[in-house]
Image (cartoon, rainbow, N blue to C red; front, side):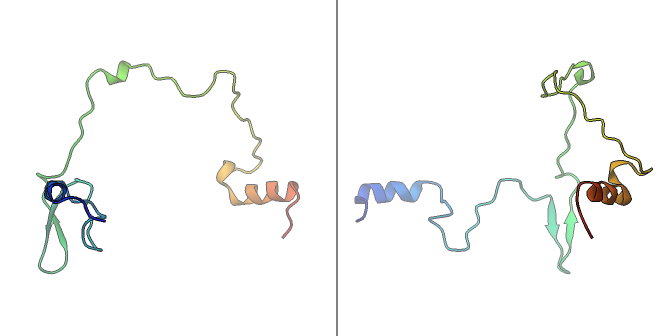
Length: 102
């Protein structure tokens, strides 16, 4: 089953999608190139093409609030080790206390 000849002409004028193109067609995500490839296989960045983002003025006075309910209490874990929660010995000590075995 094929579309009518009038529709076939209209379909040709529409933007090509990844399903209509060849099997290796990649449409991209419109980010653009920030430089160019060298003949030795490297990549040279053109700093005039690199995007820079400027924070608007007055954003420092903006009062942001966390997306957490006010009645949630912060965790107050007791870490006996000196390294805090990221200490490996402290992790093994808690693991053994909760029933882990080596």
